[in-house]
Length: 582
Image (cartoon, rainbow, N blue to C red; front, side, top):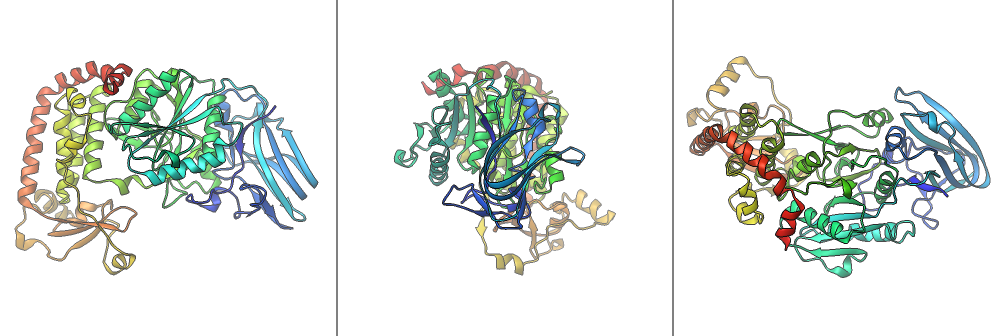
C-alpha cells in the first residue's frame, strides 16, 4: 500500500496566488467537475512542474530517513506522454523515465534511481498529443511509517474570527473529510478573546482562554495535548496565516517518516503582497538579533529552488505561523513573553533540529508592515531577555543592540518608538519576576503610545515626492549631521519647513530626514502614512533616560544575568503554566 507524500496541486481559491509557483509556462485549465486539482491539456500543450509547490525535494526527504523507496503515481486520460526528471544541484537535468498515454492510465511507477539520489529536485512534465485530463498525480512510498503521528494542530486566536472561520472551513472540506486524515489530525483553537461562534468552526476543539498572548495560547494548547495523552506531535499555527491545505498533509508525511526525534519542521513564510518572495525559511538568533534566513529570495526561478534546499546560517527556531515537532521532544514550555521572541526561545531551549521544505509554506503580511512602537517594545525586550538567558550576555553587545535600535528611532524623530524601546530596556532590567507579575500584558500596553496612521489612496503617493532610496552625501554634510544629532542641535531657522516624504525602511533614512522639521513616513508595502515632527526637548529627555538606564544596566548586568539563568527553567516549565491556568 502506498502512502502519499507529495501531491501535485493547483492554487486554492481565495489564497494569494502566483502561477509560476505551481506550473510552467502557465496554469493549466481546471476540470472542476472532477476535482479541484484536476486539469486539462489541449492538443499540443505541455506543462512542467519544476516549481516551488510541485517539485519534490530529494535532499529533505532523504534527510527524513524513513523513505527507502519512492514512486510517481498518475491518473491521466487522453493521449500524450509523461516524463519524470531529476534536476541536480548544479542544474543538470536527467530524464529518469517516460511513459506513453493511450486512453487512460492509472499507474504507480517506482523510481529505481531513488536509493542513489541525494540532492536536487524530482518533477515531471506532460505533453498532450490530443486533449488530456490529469485527474491525480503524486509522489508516494510503500515504506512503512517510522511513526503514525497523532497530530494536534494548535491555533491561537485573538479577535480574528474571519481568518479562523475561513481556515477551518477550508480544512474541514479538504482535509478532515478525507478518511486518511480524519482520525489522525485534530484542530485545537485556543480562543484568547473568547468570542468564537462554535458553529462556525465545526471540526475543531475550541478552548476559551484568558489572553496571555501567543505564549499563553500556545502553552495552553501544549497542556491540552499533553493532558490528553493521545497525541504524538504538535503543529503551531497563527490565526492570521493562510496556507495550502496540502502543506499540512506534507507536514504530516514528513513527521511520519522522520527518524529524527528532535525534528522541528518550520514552514516557509511568504509575503502575501508578493507571494513569490520569502520572508523567512528558518531563522537564527545570535548576539541578541533575530535573523530570518533566505529573506527576499524569489521562489519562481528553479535555480532558486535548488538554493533554498541548502542550509544557510544556523537555524535554531521556526516561527509559530507554522511549526511542527514531536511532543516527547519538549522539555521546555513557552516563556511568558506574551508575543515576540517566544518561538525563538522555545527553539533554543528544546534544541530542535530545524528542517524547512519547499512547498510547505504559508502567507502573511510582511514583518515590516506590522512594525510599530508597540511591536518594537515587544521585540526589543524579548531580544535582550533571551540574550541574557541563553546568550553570552556581554555588556557592550547588549548596549549596542538596544542603543542602535533606540537611536535609529530617536534620531529620525520617531519618539514613540524610541520611548517604547526605552521601556523595553527598563522592563528587562526589573529581572525575571517582572514576567510572572505581568502575564496580563494589557495594563502595560497602555504606556506605549501608538503612531497615528492614516490610510491614503494611490493618487496621494503619486502626487507626493516620496523617497525610497538614500542619496549620496558629502563628507561635510555627514559630519554636520553627526555633530548635530541629525539636526536636533541645529537652530530652528536652519531647518527646512517643507515636509520630506520617505518610506519608513528606506536605506539612508537618517540622511534623508536630516534638516527637516516635518517628516511624512510611509509604512512598508502599504498605503498607510504617519507624521513626525522634530522635537528637541523630547529627544533630550529620551536620550537622558536611556543613558541613565544604560549606566544602571552596566552595574547590575551580572546579577541580572544570573537571576535570569536561574529562573528560566521555572518560567519555561509545564508546572508554571499549569499553575497559571489552575
